[in-house]
Length: 298
Image 1 (cartoon, helix red, strand yellow):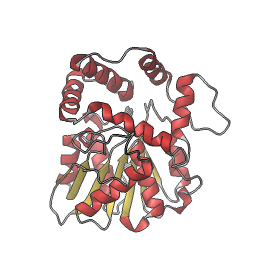
Image 2 (image 1 turned 135 degrees about the vertical axis):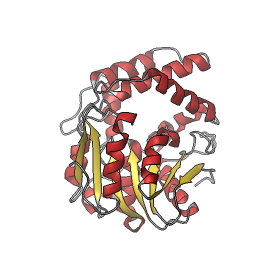
Image 3 (image 1 turned 135 degrees about the horizontal axis):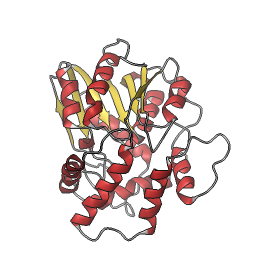
């Protein structure tokens, strides 16, 4: 495993209950909104967020010379915990970060106090192949996970067919368009806020193109996800999905069904992003879950 530098930051008192925020594939840690992080900190939590390797301010890798797999990205999670002196933490995970959290909960249960997965897919479900078949217009085998919404498929098919952005302006416009699709149709989309976020993501990246290495890592280890292991998860688990989830619709219910005693929480209007309208509701539920109380809504 390469010795890749991982950027992280923490908020709150060192004596508070620790929450480690794990973002999804190809995503920087600052996609955990500052306001949301602040609500968790104000609720008495020590909150840590970080950039995956090949995103944001973390180290980048020449994948051809130093290939890695999603198992290495999973090990980075544990490296972050070690660097912050945490034997265990509450894992709060988004999208593909939820796969990492589920796997750690299976393999290293002693390191997971509670597990929260947001907009994620069940470990072992082959979610990546479901999306790829949808984009290629191929039929899904019987028993596959639900495929993405039509607008999601159309957007990424357009990206695959079109030329890459030519400059910073075009790149940021493309990033805003992607955020709009992931946002879903249940809540108003604030383009000014989206622009500020995507400019921040663009400007703080060491190499914005390095994120493609996450796809290469998935291809390098297609059997990364073990199948049929979610019944081994012992950590109290909260599963959160938006009612307008465009990328992984219905996947949350499957996770909650497969993990013993997991709770499912549906957030009205939310898509695959974390807009301001849902921060209070999400923070309230996560604070309750990480304190041992029942989530506000199930």
